Length: 200
Image (cartoon, rainbow, N blue to C red; front, side):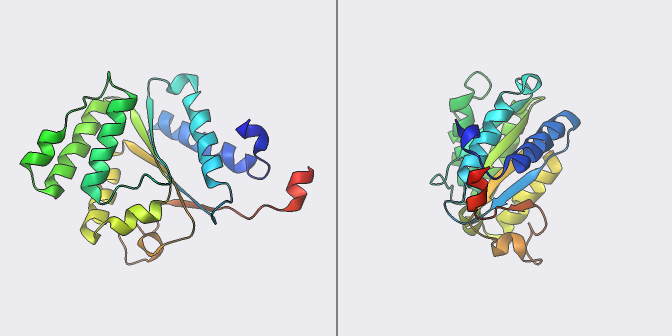
């Protein structure tokens, strides 16, 4: 049904899906950001991408997908790490233990976030993770400069996570060349729907 309702971005859909599929097979990690005004279809497109990736036969054992919806916005790096661990334990209980609380109790926040994230990488084993963030700007607004640097370094060094994200507009944390994540995301601007698209 979602596929039938998609009237303007089928080429972009296939481009992004193919990019993630090829990345999983080759070991490359993509970080994609969809930018467009509220109501333009970002969530619709994200749902289709996730659905098509989850149906790829050769990725059933090599890809795990965790999605944070528009209202699920962790505040800070430690909250992101804890929320990610909780979601993985809920979605894939046989692969990810549910109790990482002891880590947050015994370490300073920055060290705890690092420990949890690296624990997740170990639990992934041979698999990769697609991390889906809607309203990415809100997550980045909650990061300190040090957390932005830490997050980018973690993604680059471990090379186990890919990202599919949305935002209503570009925001300084990714558009300002002085910020750690400048030029980190492959950005696609979604154009407003036109009447001609409905007539085709």
